[in-house]
Image 1: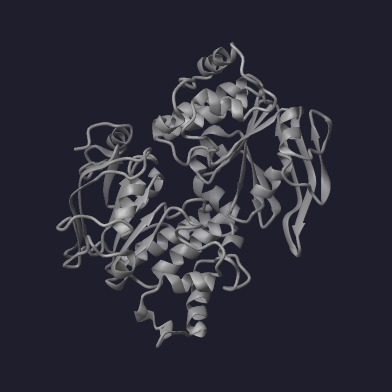
Image 2: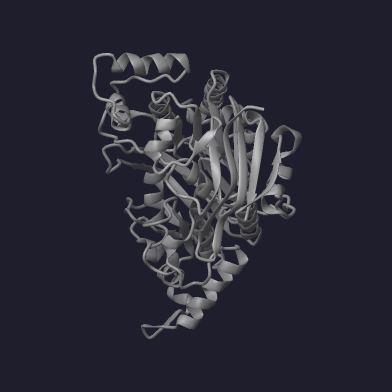
Length: 499
């Protein structure tokens, strides 16, 4: 058996925590190999060791049969290992070609460089214009830029971290065509994803980590999506189901909302209308960069709107700020965790306090009652399985998935009349995503209205009884799932008719 990469008995500790505990992994030549695990399972640590960003405490690696111990990503790239990160590292004001050149080691401008980009673009179906400004590109096109930048390094192993999290269904299909062609041409791929149905479709093998340890290797096609998730978390998943869809009267409405973006690369919102009833879960699907950030800014109250545009529970809220809206029992979970949803250098207790209305009695006569604050924090940590020693830990010390669970729990335990959430399970493992989804359903069953803005179409389809699509700043009418279904949603996501 020919292995491109052999990882043997890798251990990496941080104090008493073993992020990787005697982990072994073998990747075959020309294969697409999945690395799976819940948040904190050790995936990122292992990948960083392979890519030269971290040094292991013990264990060894072999690359093409020879000892491999990279001291830096530069050394990993010299050996033929490239990586496409989940969050793109592109300069929006520069062209595609300029961005690619900046990301290549020891590559300068030459008269044939444009031809090289076009060659790889054509060979692997990665349609891109080298002279186009990145700020004008779709998210899918930006990913193609990142992939071409890696391919110009002629990699033998390509590591991809959550590559489909911001793509349309068609872009996912196009990406899979590219990955299969890369594998056919001799490039192995290490594929990290929480989307298990995609893993079953594209990957021939999977390695599953839990708690820093290797728990199983398998062929994904031989197991269901649910079985893979249960291997990752070590317990049975609860089936998603609403006990009683019993909607009440209208509680929130958007009426003909139009607003120009303040960002030169932003999206103007045009004539958006939407109504939510008590007890309903309404979803807004769409590819990133189609006005989601601008819409959340207005809904949260970070930017005021005209009168007679936003109504909640009988109140015209267009001029109210975020705090004033919270006083009415409107709560929010923004997409950006650090810096928006939580203050990085504050503790979880402090972040809990910042977002609470006075009615929670965390303060009395302007004096903070830290015992009450800590009680709320500990309830969130317990109910949502937030992996952290205590509420005194800084927000930035948590992994992305654990901070997301904290943010969601912080809002849900207050049982708001309306919850507006963007990307509720962004970067969260299958088990935790299932828990968050169950909590959202339970909140709606108790009569709260929930508006979900998500790029994860599976999430929207599994939770929402009413689905709209946001494309180029315009919101579609509700999609009739029985009549039109997924095909209509996919069409709208790539710029089809909005009504």
